[in-house]
Image 1: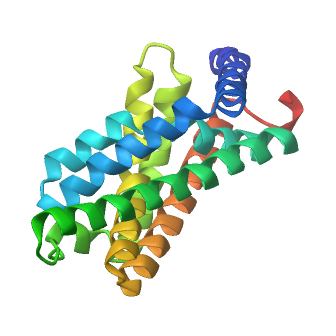
Image 2 (image 1 turned 60 degrees about the vertical axis):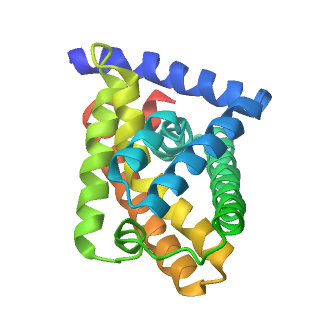
Length: 212
């Protein structure tokens, strides 16, 4: 099938990016921190446009899809690298959001209000799982097809992942543990949905253990 011609290209592309991030991780973590900072400010200001703008910066597509591809190809080493980068990136995002929240509270001199944008990222609903699933499908499709901008895949994934991490950091900065737990639960649900959606899509394009 014509789809199969994309397999080697995407695998090499993903492995190269993972090697770049693990070999020189500074750029990855800097972009994660910047994306988290932008998302945090947008959440505090209750500004949807700013929150979405942060998704353009976040480089989460490589570790997320790298992990999905490693599960399909039973590539343990690549899966470990992807999971490690995703975990460390998530921690960086949360810490950055927490620090910025404390800084904003200090500068403003007032308590930070819980905006609607923040509340939305603590609403654990099964429909969000469907949104994450279709985001994973759309992102993986854009990731595989060479005629579609790679940034589209990154935005599709980051929209479901970065805001909950930023809210977890806001909750940590405010000492509001309900914000932390609910947003992290939504993050886990979204990540599961994205992974499942991307795995289904990659399989439909001919990826599998026999291609490892």
